Image (cartoon, rainbow, N blue to C red; front, side):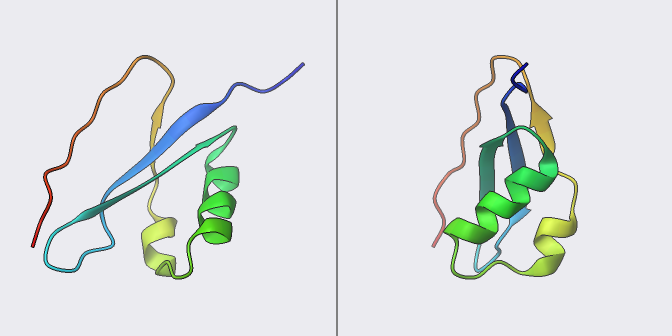
Length: 67
């Protein structure tokens, strides 16, 4: 049986002048972290240590751009 994909969302991360967002579609938080590390050239370890928001139902999110 295939595991269900979920959206893992980290907010208020990757701060420069404003907060950033990281997200991954994966079957577990561990897999999401692995995918982010594979696709991003630099991610602070403490950002990925935080627990992500796990989304398994319809969901919308927006983030205004910063400077």
